Length: 189
Ligand SMILES: C[S@@+](CC[C@H](N)C(=O)[O-])C[C@H]1O[C@@H](n2cnc3c(N)ncnc32)[C@H](O)[C@@H]1O
Figure: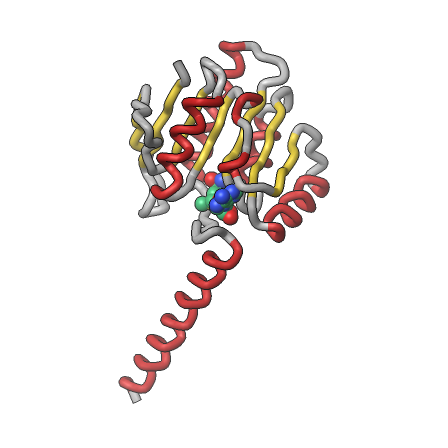
C-alpha cells in the first residue's frame, strides 16, 4: 500500500514537472515565469526612486525585460507615479493578463509591448530591470553597450550581465525564495 502511494506521488510529480517544462518552452521561450522575490523587488524600487530623485529626468523611463504577468511593473509604476514604465514580454497571454490587471488597478503610467527584448531599442530607457536566464546575458550586455544612454541604471536579479559589464555593486539580499538572493547593479558609463 505504501509503495503504491509513493509511486502515485512520484508519477504525478513527474507529470507536473513535465507539464511545467512544456509550458515554459512553448510560451515563455524556455524562461520560467518566476517572479522576482518581494525583498529584491523592494530593493530595486528603492534604487529606482533614489536614481529618479538624483537625476530628475522627465519622463524617467523604466523598462522591465520579460515582464511576465506584470506584478513587478505594476508595483514600480505605483511607487513612481511620475515615471513611465514599460514591460517588454514575448508571451501573448501574459501581456493580455498584465493589461487587464493594469486597467483594473487604474494605472496610467504603464504600458506593455509584446515583443522579443532582443529587438527592443534601449535608447529610450533611463533604467532597465531584469530577471532572466544566463543564455541571454551576453547578447543583452552587448546590446546595452551599443544602445543604452550614458547614466542608465541597470539591475539584474541573480545573473551577471555579459560583454564585459562590471557591477557597481553586488547586493546580497535575504529572501524566502531559496533560489534568489543576489542583485547586481550596473551603470552605463
Ligand atoms: C523570470 S520572468 C520575470 C518576471 C518579472 N520581470 C519579475 O522580475 O518578477 C521572465 C519573463 O521573460 C519572458 N521572456 C523570455 N524570453 C523573452 C524574450 N526574448 N523577449 C521578451 N520576453 C521574454 C518570459 O516569458 C517570462 O515571462
